[in-house]
Image (tube, rainbow, N blue to C red):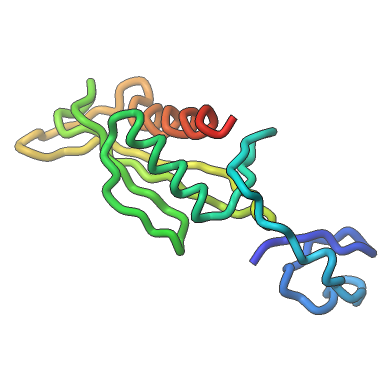
Length: 147
């Protein structure tokens, strides 16, 4: 489900709604029908793509930064990956990319990360935001691959 603007009152409504809950105006078929892009593009902070194509770009970006893809959940739009050894952890960083559809075929990509504690290591410090920087690096690589 994506949010669209009502053509009458401008309120954000579900693209699946038959009428606007605010003003009662019918949701036109032309408003809800969007054509899937043929390729992934990036501009003004958003990716234009199908979810499947964007996941492929995310996997390529993770691999080109020499990180390891751990899991892909296409339905949820989440890609999990790990890095090698970092300054803050011998076991590297565990991270996830989250693809959020903000409009039909329009996605924002965010993520989260943490230092790993494995193999007898007692403490893993996220020095200078190192874990989050790995997510940012992959997102920048996605932008580079699609620009």
